[in-house]
Length: 216
Ligand code: ZN
Image (cartoon, rainbow, N blue to C red; front, side, top):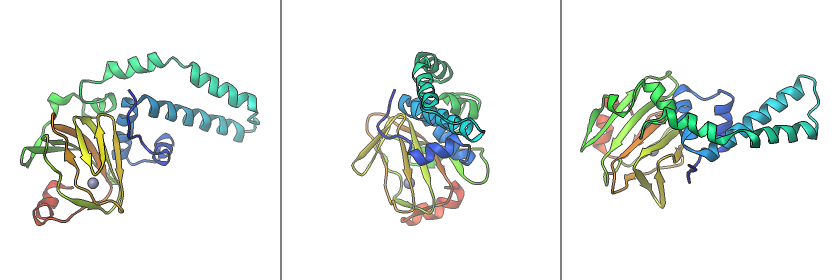
């Protein structure tokens, strides 16, 4: 499937070159496994990167080799790639996330956050945190700003942020400029994978008090 809100080129480039912290890497790998278009963009990027490396190693990159690269990309059997992804994912968790948690949704050890919401913090390197969030349909996240980057990937249900709706496979990338109050869409409880490299800035007193305990 292709999704409406895709990863940006600069983040995809950092992913392709292995420059993302582990937490963000997991979010982007999961997004790419759910979005055919992002996967094609990534493959194109990697193929072009390979062609540039060939060029740097002394071979001149002629138009012919660029053409050959593009032909290789377009000839790559997409069905085979898709089958690989489908085989490894359960209904909610995409393949890279299943590998990471070593199981599926039933194996998640949720911790309550209050009001029916829950989370589980996944192990990752110190540069950034990554967690699974479960937000009941219709519930709002506390209003907050960001002191770094926040990447949120929807795995089940959807959330509304301002005028935008984010559904399964969609990724939202927030930075210091954005303050928001995402609301889980009605109809189905929302499950997201969210990574941050700096604490959120909550405007309400209660979330601020709870913040150190929730490590958010
Ligand atoms: Zn946010």
